[in-house]
Length: 285
Image (cartoon, rainbow, N blue to C red; front, side):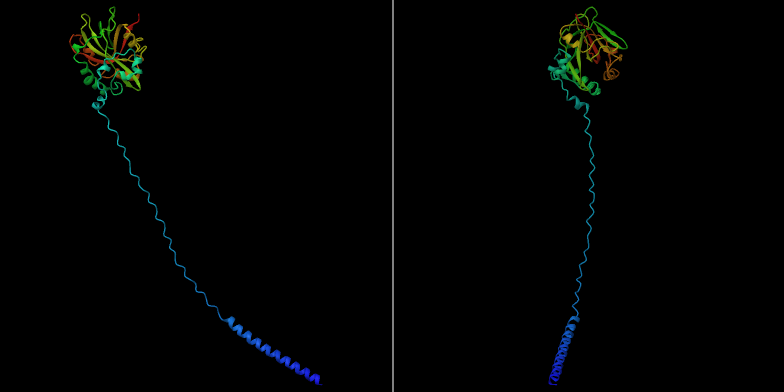
């Protein structure tokens, strides 16, 4: 009976203790719950600064300055002529051959281009070369003329059966056209005895085998007459033949080619200076 009473007491104590513990636990949990329910401070969103993107400035195309090419001033005839002063030593150097003039042009007198700058070249002929020759009556004849023959197409000084070699050295000059050299011997003719001068003729020579009027009278004759061959005739071409080169034909058709030769009068002491396209024929014996 005691044991049962003691057992009940122990159960009552045990139950009471458990009840106390449960009350304590509930109190703790309630306290914890309160803590848990305490709201956390709300994080205040930090306002980000507004970033305004400034556009890159648009590149402005730089205007290139307009370049105006100023043309080189065209040299005047007088300025061109100054480039061709007369060197009497060169002018009076008689060439031994056309080939020597081509190989050594610095030894000889150069003139403006009669085919490319005709007006300038004629001005040089009239105002520079002829005065350098001096008075014609004092010139020494270097070619015997013989008979004077003149037609619409050509003129000739023909020695016929009285051919002579050169009477004396002759002056000469050359000019360049399209990188080609044209030789111009300057002959003062003697007309019959006593070999007085009868005019001065400058022959623009070119390579010709057959131009319609002349056969085989090319630049090779310069060497032949230098070596003492007799001159059969000299010819001036007044109208084009069959196969004249274009540049030669153009000059032949110009007003400058043998200007005044149709009025030529072989009077001793009269000054006659002519220039034009022509040829020389020597006798090869």
